[in-house]
Image (cartoon, rainbow, N blue to C red; front, side):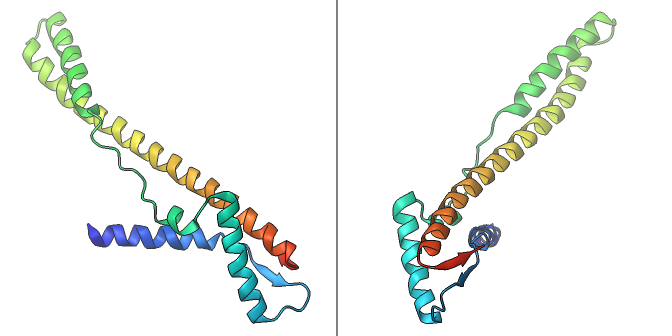
Length: 149
């Protein structure tokens, strides 16, 4: 599990910094000057946006705990199965058992869909936050005479 978490963390960090805009010296700045300006703009963007890209990249998505979707699905399925079994003249207990099993599967599917939607929302939020930071960084670099793309 630790190895999986490390892979996720490394991937998130790489993705956050992969969005960094490319900067090119527009006025013949030296490589040393560009490195100095780059560091100054990182700090300026961090200060002005309140966003630290290293923290954002390493912030794990909050795992949501058990939602009870399987239990609720089983209860709904059991109730429906008991009614169908009773109305059709069959054993209501058997109908409830079959309904509960089907409900567990349906509840699990709903739970997986909910977790996927939460993960997608968290990723979109992180992306938006990083876009704000990189726009500020790019504005700083343009102000220092660099072409930013």
